[in-house]
Structures are given as structure tokens and as C-alpha cells.
Image 1 (spheres, rainbow, N blue to C red):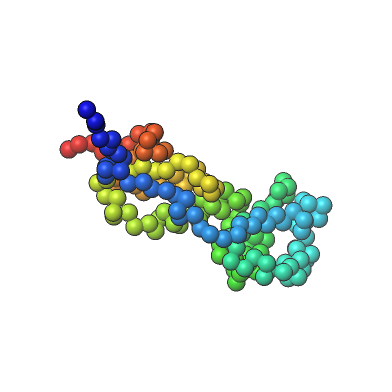
Image 2: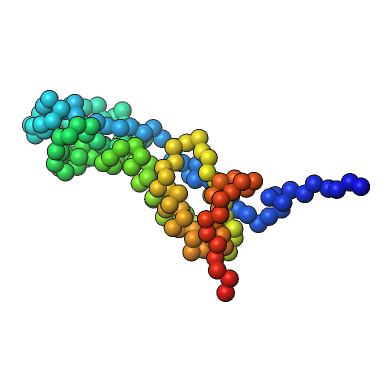
Length: 170
């Protein structure tokens, strides 16, 4: 007696959602201003403005830029704003913080603008493993967006998923 092997995953209504598919393509740059500070700690406005004016901003064309200071210097808000005015014609996005904050902000914008109507009432598995640096906050933002519409939410792979949420039956 021969029994046919049935792929229940392929036949299910389970929808796989992979955040990696939405990863914004582009160079990411961590721009550390510590080298523009006196001894890495003191911002002198005149020399800071001069360095900004003389810097080659073309190198950030189509890049995502995170402005940071890796020392404990107190940096006034206007300094980051000034750098943003120079970066604006070239960079795709400029933020203050590290590269994880940059990617979190990029994913926030992407997730907020997703059309999720096709996921209404469906079981959704959020793919867990990725080769690209998807920030952890992106998964939380996605849950926040999908939970009101999805029938259920799981995490991982179809063959070994972790249940996260299931709509209550009315």
C-alpha cells in the first residue's frame, strides 16, 4: 500500500512575509563628527562650519547617512542640522544615530506605507532568518501593523514556526 506524500505547507493558506524583501538598496554611511571637534570633544563653530564647507559631499550620492559622534561630546542640534543641509542634495536619507537607527527609520517608513489588504483574514508567517541587517524593531513595527488584520501571526519558517497571535473567534 502506497501513500502519497502531501505538502501541507504548499497547500495551506499560510502567507510568508519576508522583511528582507523590503530592504532598501543603497550604501549606508556612519558619519562620525568626532574628527571635526577640537580634541574630539569641543565643537568650535567657525572651524566646524569651515570643515563642512570644504568637505566633499558628492561621495554620499544616493547613500543613507547616519550622523553620530562616538565621543561623549555634547553636540548642539544645529551642528547635525547644518550637516544635513549639505547632505540633502546627495543622500537618500539622513538621520542622527547609528546604522541600526538608520535602518529602523527606513523600515518604519516602508512598513507604514505597505499595502496589507491582501493579508486580511489570512494566517501570516513572518520569516525570521535574513542575510541583510533587518533591525529587530522592524519586526515589532510589522506586528503592530499586521495584528489588526491577520487571522494569525507566526514567526520563523513554515516547517518550524512559533505562534505569536491568533484572532479570537466571534
